[in-house]
Image (tube, rainbow, N blue to C red; front, side, top):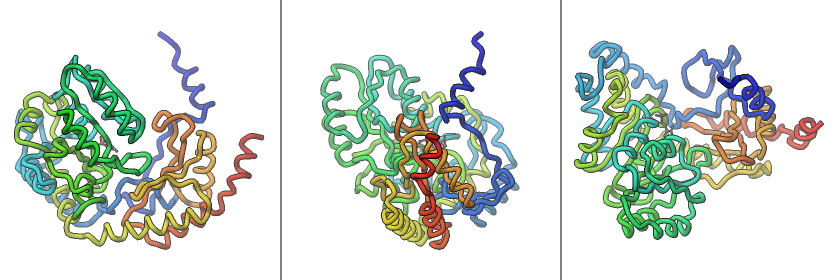
Length: 392
Ligand SMILES: *Cc1c(COP(=O)(O)O)cnc(C)c1O
C-alpha cells in the first residue's frame, strides 16, 4: 500500500488542496460560512429559487404526503405520482415527447452515454466538457475523442476519420467554468450530416436562457430533431436537486431498460420532485428573475471591464476572472474574503493548467448594490502588490 500523506502534501504545496466550507444558513446572497457572514458570488442558484417560500412549502407538503424517502428504485416501487408528474411537466417544458428523472446530473450523463455506446463506438467531447460527460464516455468503453474548445473544424476532421460504429457528440450547452455557449446550430448540422447523436448538457442554460428559460437549445431556435438528447440538472437554476434527460419515446424507453445509473439507484425523494414542480412553475411564470439577472450581468461586465479585469466572453451568469496560476487565484479569493465576499477560486484539474480563475456567479437574488460592492472589492484588489507578496 502506498502512503497517502506525501501526495496530500504535494497538493497543498502546489496550492491545489481542496477544503470544504461549512454553511450555517440557507442558500442566498448572504451566507454564514464557517461562522462568518459573507456576501456570496459562487452559487449556481441563478434565479434565487433554492430558498423560495413556494418551493420550500411544496417540499414540506410533499414530505407530508409522501414521507421523507422514496423507498426504492424507480423500477422497483419508488416511482411516485410526484416523479411521474414532474417528468410530464419537464417533457412539456422542453418540447419533447418524454423526460426521465435521474437522481443527479452526474448519473444522468453516465447513464445516457453508457446506454447508447459501447466498444467500437466513438464519443466526441469538447475539451472543456463537464467531468460527468467525460467520465460517462470513459465508462462506456467507446473511444473517447476530445477536441479543442468549440473548434468545429477539428471536430469535423476527427469525425470524418471514423470508419465504423456509432458516433455521439456531447457538449455543455453553457460551459460550466467559462460561461460561454457551445455553437449548437453548427454542431447540430454536423451531427445531422454524420448521422451522429448530439447530447447537450444544459445544466447552466436551463432556467436562464431561451424563451421562458427553456435553455440554450431554445436560445438557438433548435428543436428535438436537431438536438435529440437534452440533459438538464435541477440543482442549479431550478434550486432543488436531481436531473433529467428529455428526448424521444424510444430514447427514454431505451434508458429505462438499459441505463444502469437509472436502474440501480434509489429514486430521489418524491418531496424533492414536488419542490421542483413548484420551481418549474416559477421559472416559467417569473420572467422578471431572468430580466434582473441580465441586468446584473451587464452591470458586472461593464464595471469589471472598467477595472481592467481579465473577463471571459460570457453573457451568462457565470463570469470568471482569469488569474492564471492557482496560487494567484487563491490569493485573490482570500483577499476578497477579507472584505466580506465569498468568491471561489477554481483550479486545475477542474480547469486546464494555467487558467486558474475566480468563478463569479450572479443570481437574480443579488441586488445591484451587492454587485456594486463586489466591483468595489475587486477594485481594491491590488493585484500587483498581491503578486509581489506571493513571490517574496
Ligand atoms: C453540475 C453539473 C452536472 C452535474 O449535475 P449534478 O446534479 O450536480 O450531479 C453535470 N453537468 C454540468 C455541466 C454541470 O455543471
